[in-house]
Image 1 (cartoon, rainbow, N blue to C red):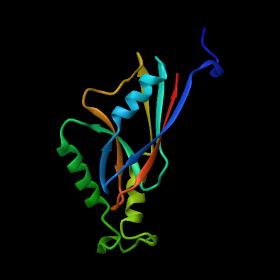
Image 2 (cartoon, rainbow, N blue to C red):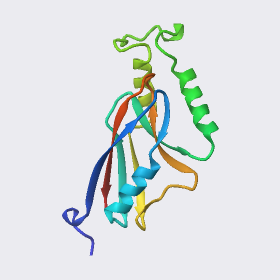
Image 3 (cartoon, helix red, strand yellow):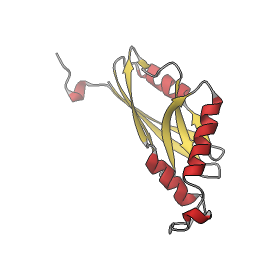
Image 4 (cartoon, one colour):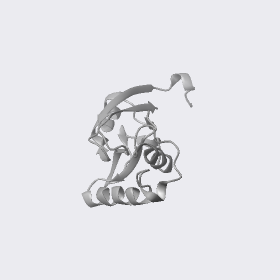
Length: 149
């Protein structure tokens, strides 16, 4: 018998993730702990970041060169607004990294769905969950974890 939506387990939590400026901050361990402590065996974990100038990624967590190359790629793809190639940008009230951060977030994702089975996220062997900070200065970001099972 399939449970009604009201019978499904629902768990929600918010992580505060501190960044030190541009780059990837892994939070796989915290998400894994949240899923384990929920007691939910089968379900879907939704991860959502509550900001418009950072994003979320599932990315390789074994070789740090992957992270370095991703950061370099995005810096080259969307340079700061004071770069001559970005002269078309209007929104610059918060500095030359502001609008490029919004563009980078628009090109990536602000939510991710991860299947859960056997009480574990079904990530691949080398996959980790990352907050991708696009601003130059440190921030504390809010990431919502919502598990429906």
